[in-house]
Image 1 (tube, rainbow, N blue to C red):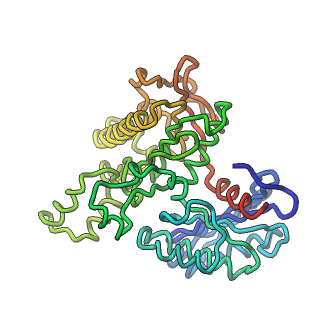
Image 2 (image 1 turned 180 degrees about the vertical axis):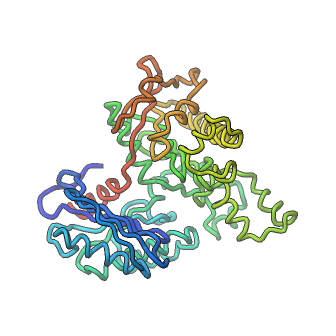
Image 3 (image 1 turned 90 degrees about the horizontal axis):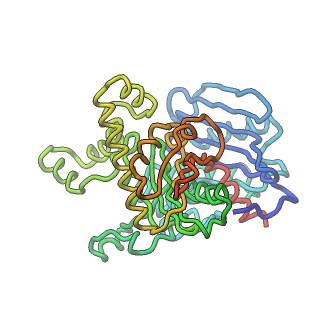
Length: 405
């Protein structure tokens, strides 16, 4: 997606309001440069931490109580103003907000008005930890400068192209429709950005390329992208389904929930916490940091080895499944914290898949190189790539394309 124009205001403030944090970046879309970044975390606790970093200066860090998201955004606005980048600047075009769940209604970035706010609020039961916080960010930004367009960019939007046979669960249709039960997918801004950057790396147009994207961070998801359109993705109605993650289980037999309730005496809220907060890598070995797990595995720790093996096994299952879904694969691409930095994960995920045309060059894989790069040998039929994700730039790009024309 290209920027619409660069005459007139060209700055976009990107806000990501989480349950207890606010991340922000100010970008100038004339040259896609970052003018400032910041993070306010531990909102509502005894002492919050605020780190603000201007592009041409040292980070400024302070700790003090921050009661709520409104106060956090006001603090961010003050820091930006101190750098001459305030929300009243005539160069600021719009604020782009990450909104986790857009349901089936929102398939594109959307300028926020009262009806859009109400619709996002109605979707909160599908993302109770995220959409309410996203709404707080939007409301506060509107109050700080009512003239600025506020644009919602949805994590789920990229996945609204899923064919119905991929989005549907095989349960009673009336029940599913009544309760909005279907596959929505997440990490959409990352999958959109990375699949498009991968096509550019191959020197081809996005609509010519079939790509399997592995977004591997503490949260992890896979996507099958055919000609620029997502046709399958591993996360489902919630971000719990799919790959093994830092603290989330990924795929489990649904009957595990019934078993733990009936025979383990566990309440539903306890099972929810188990699968979301005490599972995945952390549940298997007590660590959710892949760097620690690799160090422990290399030192002979069997629990760390098991956690790594389970993680890789799930990755390989999805690679094979999405190869079958796409029929032809031009590239397999790794992104996000683990995907971009953990060479052993990439090597293990691709090992033995030569019959699918997949191979990794050991030297290219282990090289510490920034930026998009191929790590497959020249003879490989399918390119294997590492493409750093940039969700903030994707949100800014979509925001600018919508309101900058």
